[in-house]
Image 1 (cartoon, rainbow, N blue to C red):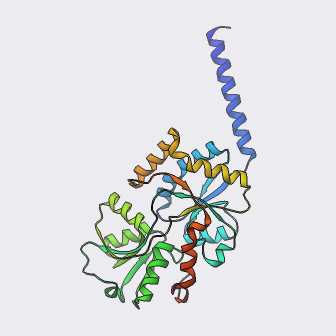
Image 2: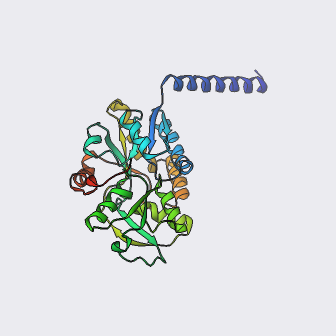
Image 3: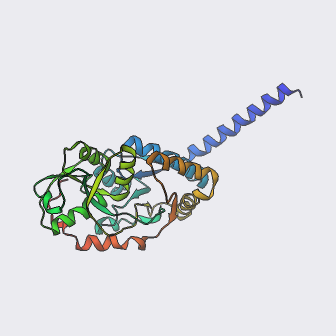
Amino acid sequence: MNLKTLKRAAIALAALLTFGSAAHAADEQPYAFNVLNQRSIALTSQYWNPILIYVSKKSGVPLELRLAKTTKEANALAEQGAYQFLYSNHFFTPERDRLGYRVIARPAGPGIRGQLVVPADSPIKTLAELNGKEVAFPSPDAFAGYWLPMDALLKSKVNIKPVFTTNQEAGLAQLKIGTVAAAGVNNQIIQRYARREGFEYRLLWDSEVYNDLCIMASPKVPPAKIAAVRNALIGMMDDPEGRKVIEAGADLLKIKDNLGFVAATDREYDNYRAFYKKTLVKAANQPG
């Protein structure tokens, strides 16, 4: 057999193996993985698609990024069982807790805080000075970006005009151009946005620390598949290929430290549940 024949045989074998792999993958319906609307759909896709491609390959569990136009739409679909995996922190309310989504992993790091911020040159120095002014929030469902800061405003008896912007970075863009007086945010989102956009801001208020958004799995996903996905996620920084994906995503979002994912459990999010039981936001008029 000459060299040319060997090359043709190798190409044919590669094609056969590729076809076989594709056919096998097509046999298994991908699991829908929804990510909370914190940034634009384009930026969210750029960050998460490489992660899900890696995890799918490593775990043998096909995952597909599914994004909704708004947080409200995404949460409604999750409540109907449209997603098998979530990256969110909206499912610790008493109503959603009963749906059975369970925490399997979270980003590495010390956690997040809800904050109210203003531009660095804003004349506003206190929460009381926000009275009657427009404040940007991502959505009425946002934990760090709405529930925590709104609870603080209600407890301080400050009446503001909420402006819902669909995601945190959209609200920060409005703050940057001066169409709102302040914005409710997650401290990590504002830090990374400020680095990318060269935006200087000042902190008016911040909350205690809560664990970051987490990856949650539906009770309908087989335990073995959940375990495979969790192991692939938390092993990314120990694998050269996985580390490369994480580092590229960190560069995109300007994440400087605490890269990758760590294992997490449901009990680590009990302070969310405790907050929902005592917050004043429940009594507030929340637009749909």
